[in-house]
Length: 80
Image (cartoon, rainbow, N blue to C red; front, side, top):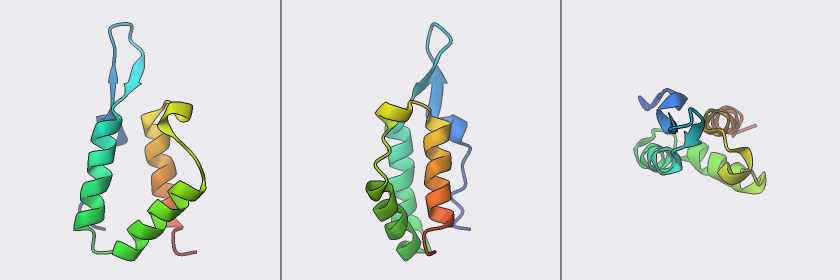
């Protein structure tokens, strides 16, 4: 699609205890880049709108791959 496909594990890392921790700044930077570089700006705007509407936050979910998948689901169904 936009050439901005990425593996969601790139946004997480393991701490010294072996637990996966969020790397939200990287995810936010990726989404910002996607919004700027997309060939489908309406889809990204609708994705952002729906993301804000369904109040899901990284502090509640605490799983970057799940947040990424939620975002991708919103994007896939943004127009309908």
